[in-house]
Image 1 (cartoon, one colour):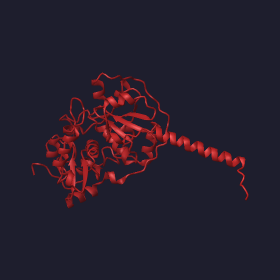
Image 2 (cartoon, rainbow, N blue to C red; image 1 turned 135 degrees about the vertical axis):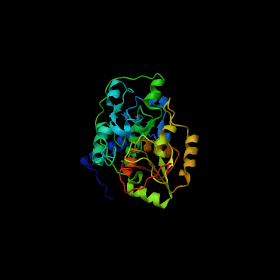
Image 3 (cartoon, rainbow, N blue to C red; image 1 turned 60 degrees about the horizontal axis):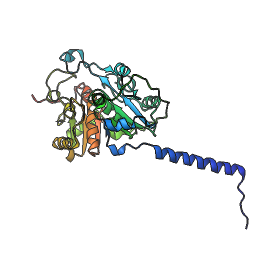
Image 4 (cartoon, rainbow, N blue to C red; image 1 turned 30 degrees about the horizontal axis):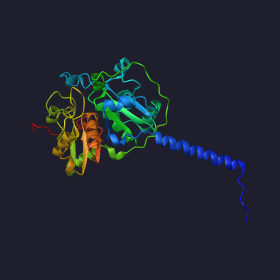
Length: 328
């Protein structure tokens, strides 16, 4: 019987593979899995994990300075970057990603914001140190809705290990937790976007849902907007026919910026008809507040939830599409 002799180059190859396997195993073991948190973490948890190497904390604030003003009817909705506020102070170690200026594509005005290309999204995430191995906590200063938007966008592009900080910057500061002005430059990473079309609804899909009647269309705008009352923020007053109202401002406590608890949220969505629908489509004015609604639904375990990215900005601007109001 002959014994095969392992040559030195082969030994080196085997050892290299073994080392790589051990490194990958260690990385997997150290990777922070956020799935148990059901899309939200509280300030206590973040304070305890703020220095974890695999954690990327992102502020995603944008501002709507005239949204609640009567002048919005003539001026249009103004959106401003939250970069200046971030530069003044922020949660320590966090980085800023501007949804408005960095990862939106209005497509010639058809959308208010709109999803960017997969290439552009990958570039921005990579520049901010986000890769498949990252764990991401997102916060804002605007009732969680911009944080929820980035959370949804990450999911759309195939990344599921992200959560929103419940209460955001507001809750953090209310509790007397530290902030600073240091701008953290994270090492670039390699984010690879994988588009998940099931999470995004387009105009034709929404029109089909209206005609078939088997879907639950949730309008996340203010109740006055749902009813078609002025001021007019979009091309036409009103709502998409057959939709139901779950105002985003009624799912968040205005003082603490905390989401309503799971029990209350479940009751709200059951009353809206979400629990018996074949699918749920969330929309608002420009696809921002609707993402906050989608987050709550995901937290409660709803499948088949998508966001209509064009929302009322696209729908109301297309005069061929039906619209209704409470005065009809």
